[in-house]
Image 1 (cartoon, helix red, strand yellow):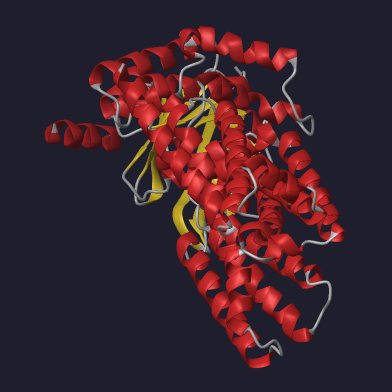
Image 2 (cartoon, chains in turn cyan, blue):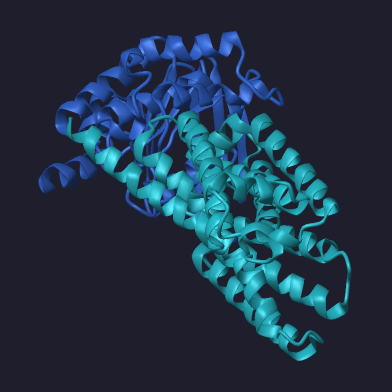
Length: 284
Length: 238
């Protein structure tokens, strides 16, 4: 292996179906998460990615303990439900948005970890937890079925996003005005919540639950540094996200670094580059 | 000059606790109504009730002549989220047309033209590609006003529109609103600015703690006990 050139190495890896699957899933997840990232960051829900991924982790722990083969049956509905509850608490509830996110997030993480520890028959408890949190192994253990599920979910997310793009913009920019003119803002908030949950469940396979926030936040923040219209910010953040996922993935293959962390590192690098660009353009 | 909104014996409040009681007033087409009152007197609750966002506890808010709360163009107070929002002026103005789209996902030609016309009307068509967060306060209010005009041809409801603007921009905005009123658009404005209200309004609704203190034309207000007291107090402070 060490004698191979970089191209040979890549050719060797991409001949393996499992690597190709991982790449497809990775790029799709990156694309989907960046689309909604802009809205979530602007709605001051940057941490919802973190919160929901911990919920998904808790649900996964329950699925492992119960011994289900298809864990999605539990993970998807639980995460979607939590997303709906969290995004609804935004306006008029006793527990405010950030506190509610923190509460659900920490609670689900603790209970999930406790359940796995108490009931899991696997000898490598810490290894399991580590990989679900950081996603290092799971992306290379994807089955063909997982890939198809991922493609289907991403197709739904992207279609919904494009169809409701203008409404999502209006509801994000000014909820009161939208409601006053008769737009069903609550319904669109619900849609945003549901597709956020779908994206997070998707992203868990790639970067693991701890790093999902990064995938949601960084491309949006980078794009917002430089671009001035909502549409250009969204397009740019999608491009950044896919680009970073691709670069991070290849680098992680070549240097055997953990995939999720490498992708996030690429995103951080792009963020700093965009910060510099923005301060340069402001000066001139 | 038909009436557009008739409020009779309206009680507003939160969770059963009234904040404003026995509101009785009529808004006619072409009126310029200023709503005055201290903080906490229920002005913002009244706005929500007029817009149909929050039902009144009792009483009736009647919309006449096929007019509905959805046809009110609303200029809300700015939120912190909006101040650093990456959106172009055109995108924001167009979003005023969104309710007309229904389930159609994109704007049609007519809606884009409406947005363009309203930007020209308020003199901001040269800013259409600019980023909202980089504009001055006065320009931002014009953008939101253009958006409100996309949603209505009949009535504007403005929630303290000059807050945070410098004096020159305040006067410009007041003049702009007055000229829209001359074009036949009914104006409802919640205001702290008693001097401007007296100068521009045709009618005044004054809400005190928990009850309506005055409703009527501007001349009646200036001669009323409430009006005289309030004017004196305000001018005394300045």
